[in-house]
Image (tube, rainbow, N blue to C red; front, side, top):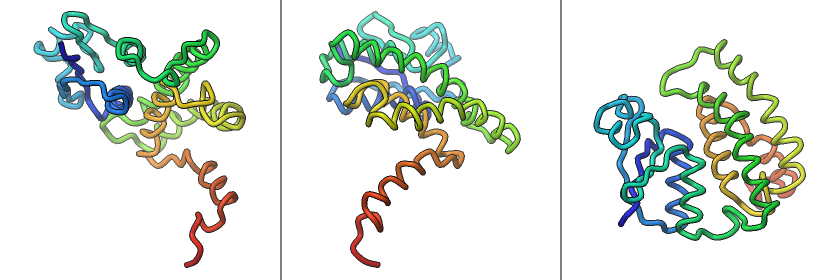
Length: 195
């Protein structure tokens, strides 16, 4: 029986699931659900997920809702490579810790920054102000010490956080300035040998 995914690819958590399934060659049938059109609140979708939320996964008659639960379910069911969700207790606990932290510290405030409708400059500044401590923590403490958020290799947490942070770039936040500067220092002229 093929897995069914109900996704809106404008949603960062939905994109994370989509990328994870494609990267891990997990077969699925996709059912697009357009949040901006209110499709998640229509009777057809409410039969799938009475909570009216995407993403949603159906494995036969088994419903999994919530992006983190879906990623964990897929990781276990499809035996994804261990780096996505390490089997070692402390390593996967660190992934769990950052999954929960990023949901509260990044996903919830970031969702209000980019909502399929324009946000005025004053409101944008207020919302970004709520994100500043979390972004500083990521930049100055977590990523200053290691290349990935939870472990030494890419994990589910990195995928989730990346998708959440990408939506901020859509409203003009330059989150990758530190990375760009580091690359320029390591390789002057961005690796080009001439003009």
